[in-house]
Image (tube, rainbow, N blue to C red):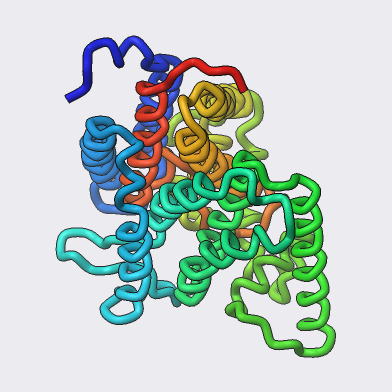
Length: 378
């Protein structure tokens, strides 16, 4: 059990942000799911169950000193790979992807938990390699370490989650002391390589390890109407999302009054495009308020990382912060048309039991480091 004195360290602003986002998400989801299922509160009820299970998981994480996680480094890494491989053996296939394991009453998505497990195991690896990340060859092992689960996730296929792992890797390498110049060169070189590969694919037919629909989503971000079907193909989601957010104006059209949402013009508005519901029904002013909550959440994470008693704790928190930052920027970016549609959910908002539990476990890690912090100067 936790000692009473540890609770004095609790970051109440951080906890408050989590609670506020969860409560708002339930309200928004009750509107987003109104015309998707027979019961208008079907998805909100299931999300509430996911939140309660997530809070239980968060509590369990808090009960153990995060330093003990080092003992299970290899076990967790192996478990991660086993779960990702199991998807291909007994996985449930839907919408052209094989990402879920059917456990009877619910579907379990290992790739969601792969992100949190990667944060823990990579933190263990980088903690042992402090001061040894300044040369090109020093970065080979960390990149290879993350590449294995990343390739398994790409195979499902799940491009969005694979990119999240890459964001986690770069964020944690930076905090772990890797040479920033090397990271910039690698990131810039990677983006250039992707651009050249896409050009060669469409110009000369170069084969790429991506599905056709994934390639179309990457391209239509430049112009969603240029999807080969006049905006009714790969660009349809983005167009309808932009219409929804644009029609919201300053104060929104009203709760359960959004035409794009309530008439189901906007697909996946209870999952990937739930931010579009916020924009249409709540409007710009309230949307800014929700974004402010996310900003404060991320800011408190960085503050907790800076106050961590050791590098391992700082790495854990920075990994979770990198994961949440990437999710938030890409999800909101794709709803307004400045990011490709990659299926990345909005943390603590989008419907999904596996994602909710994985996010709550990750936030439990942050609070674990927060409670057991020791004030030191960096």
